[in-house]
Amino acid sequence: MPASRVRVLVPGRINQRVVDRLAGQFEIVRIESADPALLTPELRDVKAIAVAGRVPAALMDALPELEIIANFGVGYDGVDVAHAVARGITVSNTPDVLTEEVADTAIGLLLNTLRQLPQAEQWLRQGRWSREGAFPLSPLSLRGRSVGLYGLGRIGLAIARRLEAFGVSIAYHTRSPREGLSYAYHPTLVGMAGVVDTLVVIVPGTEATKRTINAEVLSALGSNGVLINVGRGSTVDEQALIAALQAGVIAGAGLDVFENEPQVPEALMALPNVSLLPHVASASVVTRNAMADLVAGNIEAWFETGRALTPVPETPFTRRAV
Ligand code: DGY
Image: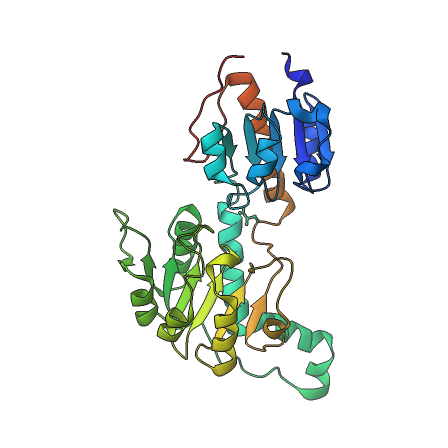
């Protein structure tokens, strides 16, 4: 079948550049969400999905000819990968092209949280500097901090490299130690939380990481402790975090991701000691363009060469001759 006739399904919203680029070669079909009830019978021949969100098993099962799901984002927790593996469907993601951007944002969020820079800017914009005088001194600082990275993949390493330049001590927790690094390794998360005062979360959202930042870990982090999350909201027990921030169990938090996005608990927004971002770690035009190109490139490569450019490790499949 010539590539021009292959149908690519786009459920929900996606960066327009993905659609513009694929539209030259493929027939793009858009539906409002990943709900299989929205599929008409003639869409049963869809062979590819480009998505920036969820792909549940039910959507895959409504598409018997589906071969590849190209996920917009390095994290692919929205895609039921176990089901894709069982069906022999390739899943691709967008690693590398966002690594430096997300690491930059993590550092920005860390500094905003510690030094209250967004609040200081509001102080100026509201005319309070000229009316009331200097913005109050920030109770927290990066000086002298000891940072523990929960996760040390590509983005974790990029954050660590940046932190080196800030002269803070660096430790990490992953399932097993990484060779050739001078950072202190901790075999348990709670053990690391007990010896650092700043915890940066950059693990994927999986069953294994779900709500692992819990009351026990926050209590170990302690009253000078600061939590930064640029991974997934599911990793943090949000109610335990709110309770810890309210009670002074930890000193502050900087969050780019939440358990139930785009809903952010009122209790979190009411807290003065948090810095909150609407999941923007990779959200610059240049980086989102690169991610869009990689989503489109994965689908193009699949049908041209039989291999995705960046398949996730669980689906190292090649295309069967058709
Ligand atoms: C990702 O790539 O997983 C990011 O969270 C999207 O910004």
